[in-house]
Image (tube, rainbow, N blue to C red; front, top):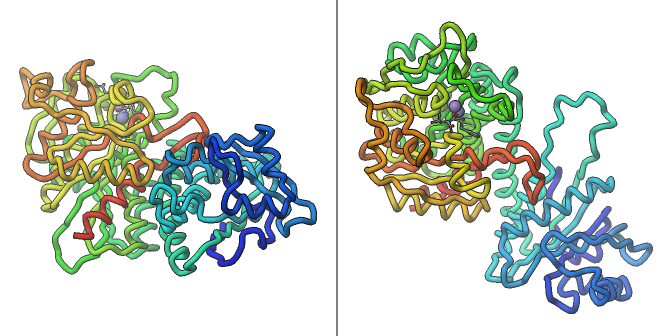
Length: 498
Ligand code: BES
Ligand code: MN
Ligand code: ZN
């Protein structure tokens, strides 16, 4: 989709549809809506008066404009209560409106900078949100649908009216970079496990390196053995698919130091292994590499935005399957730093591969570490599908991540890391065990990871509840969400600033 900034009046634009807004509780159309209302001889005013347009968030009203405007259609979208407006609501409302118009076969759309100036919303921020809303909301994964007629149309052009034009263009570019990175991650996660194997993930990262000038390296089984990555090797040993350890680096500053390591869980399919999962919804475990996809996707955005900071993405990528060679409950394995782990449940595999990734991050001398993982069902029990769980040894970094998520509309919330929780991980015959029982499962998983971190400032994001959605809502469509790509990009940008 082409998205461009234009100056002038929305009412003067020739398009399949123009979008104006209305706020809940307002008696008259305002701004662009007032200008359009005038051209339509008071049609919007009448609908408001009759109560057909209420302005509730994401309410969509379609009007035709035969001969009265160059645009064929007008959509009035509700933005809810004015004092509750924020850019995330704009992002969602534009997404829903664009999907609605695509359904009508509309191919060109124009809108103003929705909500600029309200509640101190900056014009560049809302233009970025409009751009993201359109690109994220119109995302679809239809690669495997062979019948052409089952594919819907396409909005080919979006014009955003406002000024100064150069500022709008910059905001559009930024929104595009963030949304395209998130959509790249969505593609990776939606791809089924028979295609998105560890080797395929490594290949995708290699492609990124070529396209964006990133540094790429992949460790194979021999190298993993040499480094003593017993967690990654252990989890992979039940599968026919050889494991990969993917390393992708963005260098934005002159120093050799790795400022931030982003480590992402890359289980390309999680059956649970010998501790096999129930079959209901097991298909969703093709997305157990969502953390890995998100850290790779973040580097795409960094390569395009070029902040002055060095960031390395690490993705341990195996497949977790049961077989005659699989890891068994009770087995003891040794992580890269020499720690022994008693594997009581082979379905608690994410922490085993992340243990090695975190050791590797330490070896790189990372200034800070952020890991992202679809780690625990317990995190979904605690927080639902609304927000990502945040676990950290560093209040400052943790606050930054949560703020960055807020900005992106990707909610995240902290859970405690009291040392008392670690007792649940005590093993009688090894240094640590890989499960801490049902109670506080998201926290004990985080405490397990913390054991491989020591002093480095670190944040762990448990995205088990947020990586996938079975509902179409706002800028989310069914399937992968792309969480937390835009959060990660925002964090890195904020770290690069100082
Ligand atoms: N990948 C799963 C966690 C998960 C569940 C993510 C549902 C997204 C949706 C993880 O590997 C897992 O199986 N965790 C276990 C840990 C338990 C055995 C200690 C869980 O949460 O049940
Ligand atoms: Mn599992
Ligand atoms: Zn898993």
